[in-house]
Image 1 (tube, rainbow over the protein chains, first blue to last red):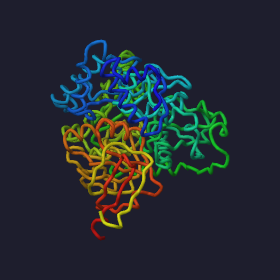
Image 2: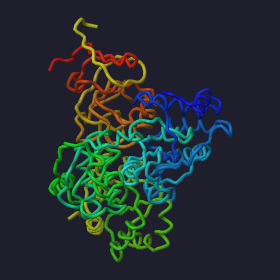
Image 3: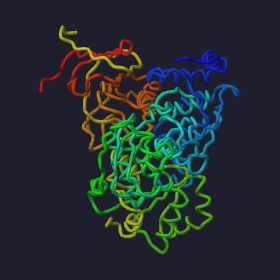
Image 4: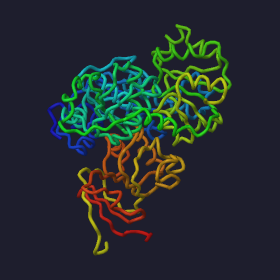
Length: 410
Length: 143
């Protein structure tokens, strides 16, 4: 990779060993993908739950954090994805003291590195959305696909180590979706219906993700009548990224780079049709049982508007099985203040903050709580949890709340 | 190496040379979605390698799937010795490359042919990231 003067100084260790190590890591990745140089980034977002980090990862972070003050802090605003717990609810979740200790150690290390502990995967709704053409280094696939597609920003999937490296150096290798030519559509899809509910938006994202199939594919989608709202885009993109590892889509007429099809699609791109039956089939494929052990709203964390809707559905109900609603630390105080938390918890539910269900030792929670059959309105969550030993089922928010009352999914 | 050893060239490569037995499937890969990382097996029921151990094997798969956790998880799996020996993919996303870099797991990606069809499951292979090559040394068990 071609390095400018500042990058050569970092590589030579003039800024200390932590940025030096970070730049070396970035050069390995950049060389792998043929990046010619670095691009400056304005924000970084780190996915670093301790289930992923393990003892090894936390020890690695603590090693960086032990470096002398003045040589270890991030250079740009660097924030965090959800943690592995909500400390106030860890006992309820059946999480062990060892898990909580690991979380506390990771947080202490991040704070020493200058990282801002926002603990959210909806930073584009709660912290600061990136702007069009802004180069950023974001982790969490749902954050990246939303930022690229809906905001028109430029990011690759930056895993925790690389996002931290970007925070420490203020740059990232220029490859992938930082390059205009990589943002052109590679497949064209026509949808002959507009999803109604969040689970339908997620299911459509899942169908498209499966068709697209790999990170370098860029779907352009036609046929959506009205502009989706932020929560609809959120579930649509998060599922597409989860099912297909997709980082960018274009919605003709509704996303900033695709005012017209020809703005993003080469001539002659063959169109493939997606019908309502396709999303019905995806949802039905998860319905192996009608009994439910737990209902979870998470992945991505819920916005204030989602919690408002959920609270309305919970009012006056009494749950037979646990219902969990997970949001960000930024939204939770408003959820409390507006009375939404009380509505959900008076019915027997639990509102959690700063975590995400699948990033919080989901396998161990299943064993501790005896939860296997899980209902959710998140297509992303059903895609992930099969590998954790759950039998996840996808349904509407209304259907999931009804299932919490009766113990059965209609 | 037998005289009929076949060599495949990758466009992308990282890490050091290793030799071992290939575990092959035309399927995706995500450490979070697909693995029981404690038991060292593929755990997602729908995965074509469900129930099989990946420990010490050269994984030959189609493409990277899912989220960003693999970037940390390869490092964590390496520390416990419950990690593939190397990764060979038709295509990878940045997360696998970032994870392989942190976890020091050799990796090749991008071939002219479908590498999951070219390499038999159980074959003995050698990968050389410096030369960007995968060498099929032995076809493995006859099926």
